[in-house]
Every structure is written in C-alpha cells, then in structure tokens.
Amino acid sequence: MILVLSPDTRADSSEYRQLMVHLANLPGISTRVHSEVGVEQTLTEVYLIGNTKALPVEDMRSLPCVEQVVRISEEYRVLGRHKDDHRPTYFDYNGVRFGQDTLNVFAGLCAVDTLEHVELMMLALRDNGQVCTRMGAYKPRTSPYSFQGHGKACLPYVFELAGKYGIKVIAMEITHESHVEEIRDALFRTGNATGVMLQIGTRNTQNFELLKIVGRQQDFPVLIKRGFGITLDESLNAAEYLASEGNRKVVFGLRGMKTNMADPHRNFVDFAHVPVVKRLTRMPVCIDPSHSVGLRAPSPEGILDIMHVTAQGVIAGANMVLVDFHPVPNKALVDGPQALLIKELPLFLEDVRIARAAYEQRV
Ligand code: PEP
Image (cartoon, rainbow, N blue to C red; front, side, top):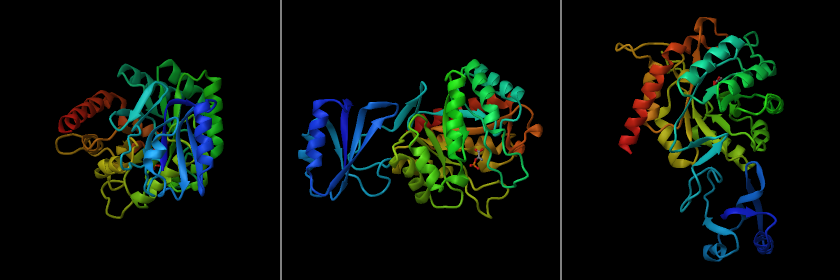
C-alpha cells in the first residue's frame, strides 16, 4: 500500500510526525519513505510493507498529510500503474519535462571522439532548437581492443560546450559506480549549466549492484535500456531496482532485441512494445532506432530504415528518441555505419514532428 502525501509535506511538520507515530503502532507493518529528488525535507510517498490487506483504505485516507491511498500489486511496485493510481507519469529535470505525454529527441554522438566533433554536433542542435543530446564517454565494447571511450578526460569540454550551446540534458552511459562521481565532479567544475541523464546500457540491465547504487543517486534521472536477451518483465523489474532505491526519475529504453532472425538489421526492432510499457508502468518510453537498425539502409522511397522505425515508434507514443549522428560518420570511433549525417538533422526532426502529429491525432 502506498500513502501519497499532500504536496509539500515536510518531515519537520507536526502532522507528519503524527502520521509516523500512527504508522509505527501498526503491528507487522514497516514503512519506507520517499522524498522529492533534491529536496530532502519534502516527502512524497510512504510505502507500507507487510500484510496491508487488513488495513482499511478509508482509515488510511483520513490520516494527516495523506492525500491518496493506492493498493499495489506485487508487480513493479514503485514504477507500475496500479488500480486507482493517480501518481504522476512525468518528472522534470534541469528545466525539461520527461513524461508519458511529452517527446524529447536526444540526437548526438554515440561516442565522443574529438572536441571539434562535439562542437559541430552541439552547434547543429542549437541551430535546430534542440536542448538535449547523447554523448558517450564510457563505452562498453564487445572487443577489448576497440575504442573504450575517452572517459572522464572528455567530460570538461563536453559539459563546457553543452553550456555554451544551451544543451540542458545529456544522456551518458555509465558502466561503473565511479563514473557517477566523475560526472558529478565535472558538472560542478564546469558550472552545472547542463544536466546528465545517466544511461544504463543493455549489457548492464541486470547488473543489480550497479542499479542499486545508481538508484540511490537521486540528483540524476536514469535511462535504463531493455536487456537485449531477456524478457520485458525482467527488464521492467530491473528498472524497479532503481526506483526501489529511491530514484523514480526513470525512463525505459527500447533498443531492439538480439535474435538470429534480426537480419538485415542489427537487432530486432521492438517498438511495438512502446504502448505496452506505458500501459504497465508510469515511465516515459525511449526508443533507440540507431542501435535497433544499426545501418544506413534506404528504402526504395529513399527514406532511411532508421527514420522509418523512428516514425513507427513515435506514432506508437514514444516519449524520447535516442539517435546517433556524426559530422563525419566514417571517422566515428564507434558505430559509424548507423550514424546519420548532421545535414540530415532538420529532415529527421521534421519526420519526428510529422509522426508525433499523427500520434496526437490518433489519441
Ligand atoms: C549506446 O546507446 O551507446 C549503447 C551502447 O546502447 P545499447 O546499450 O543499447 O547497446
């Protein structure tokens, strides 16, 4: 059972203390309290754990500070949609809203290679009215001999350029807990003008210890990608690991599934699951057409497969698009064959706009 508290409930208020005394006296029930990210004193929800079946909803509703009572099923306790659950399906971060009703495009470099390429990308984003991007600093690679990313060495210029070009949120994959501190430190040193959405890649979807650590970092939102060889349920439970540790600013990413029947694409595109994730949970859903398709193949009409599947995901209600671009794809150190050209950015964004308008007409 979840007690959703009235807005601005403070830990130091007498009403809240009264509530806590009441709950402490319930036999066999323990509590877990969630606070709003970054505002330690403002509490949002209290989870009642134990046998809550006998607790009458009406009595719970009349307790001080309680605005709503939600009975939860076992599945996806924090992030799931439950009966009579009116908790929000969005969050705000660094001035940008991420929700099941919004759409944000994160076009950018799969891997940061040179400062010049980062600057060309950010310039193009600014000129096209974009405030979000993707920039890979820590790259998990199949071969130990492949470029592993510049790591923390590139963070200062990436964040400085982001500030210069008005980029508010950068999606950046991390593979180790130490990366969180490196990012936080570099953001601080460069003035905190931009923000980072920590990305958990498909290879780490079930790295439970990493998920628990990242879940405790409540100052960053997280994009968790579906594991490419596990069930949707297993991946949604992985997202729940983040949330159960306290971080509910979670976006769920579809990036295609590994199968021996995916050819000619790199992975089997799973964007038909966009509405499924939105039905089961309150997370915004991201699609990654680049890692799904994996190559610049044009259809007979001359439209790239990456753009076709992007449109399919957006028409199905996707809330975020993570897509690889590069100023000179054949010089990219990671995934050049799937990168779109910077000159294709306006066309890509227009296509997304058309698909979004179609989605809005349909709902
Ligand atoms: C990426 O987005 O750069 C990436 C490696 O994605 P995935 O984890 O989906 O392979």
